[in-house]
Image 1 (tube, helix red, strand yellow):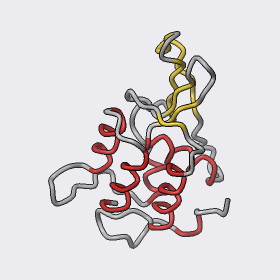
Image 2: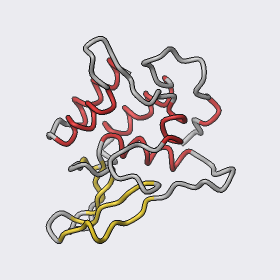
Image 3: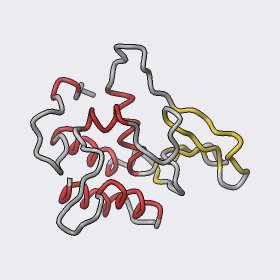
Image 4: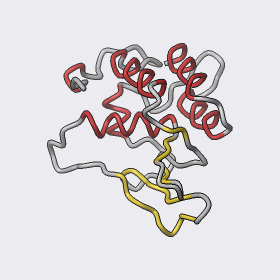
Length: 148
């Protein structure tokens, strides 16, 4: 994968994200490489061993794969065994955050912390909610394409 780091995150109008990262994110969730999960968690290991991601968990994984850690502030998936159940799998947090995208990921992607669009909704929160309600990665990709 080519590095997305060199693109930078400044100079994007409010409400838009880095176009290169957006395209990479869309391609990733449509690729079949990531199994879809949710339930308020960015990443879950299911009892059968499958790793599932929320739509924003995919963005976090892309960040981890693309980013070099320069100043010792490494982000890493952390298992949360106390919040795991046999039937729901092992939950993971990223940088001690459970269902939220860490600031370094948002900065890398050129996403302002709250993207409020003309309909008055926070697009990132809406993506997470729709993912958890069962909207497919294909439909979520359309929202990312149109709103971000």
